[in-house]
Image 1 (tube, rainbow, N blue to C red):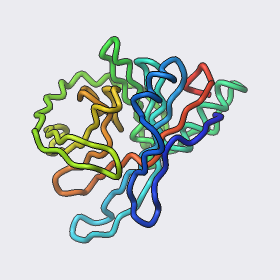
Image 2 (cartoon, rainbow, N blue to C red):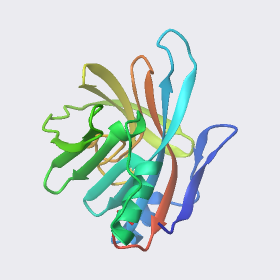
Image 3 (cartoon, one colour):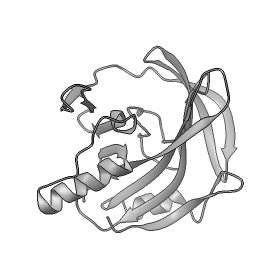
Length: 207
């Protein structure tokens, strides 16, 4: 997938640096692919503060999006171009493969089974009952607002930005008045951070 960076993560400060107004960017590129790169930081042990970090990509075209690992993204691209992928295998990362069609309110999670390494699709029908707080905070240079959610037996805290008018986010999360910039469970066992935005002239989010 051919992309160019629109804003990037300052590796030392771990803050998002805004290059130019994302609202204008989104309006200009609404007919193109937009890729949001997230980092998932997961605690190795719930009793300590050591994290493992995995990159994930949210590829968006219009009201459709795909959230997946770097390996799954590359495999999908090969399938579209050649008819053959590299397979996903049973890993932690490929259990986060999610397809969304927000115009139809459809969310599909692809799950890999441990025995046969078989992937099947599971429709997510849960209603995400967000509670939006008036609290605001700047993450890097982005003005964000706080929201709460109970999902999957966990309580989640999200920070979204209405300056990016896209009701999407990492994993299954969606439905807020702007893109989710950061979301974590209250124990910070799982933390998704937006670190980069890219655009592409490709007409297929799987390439």
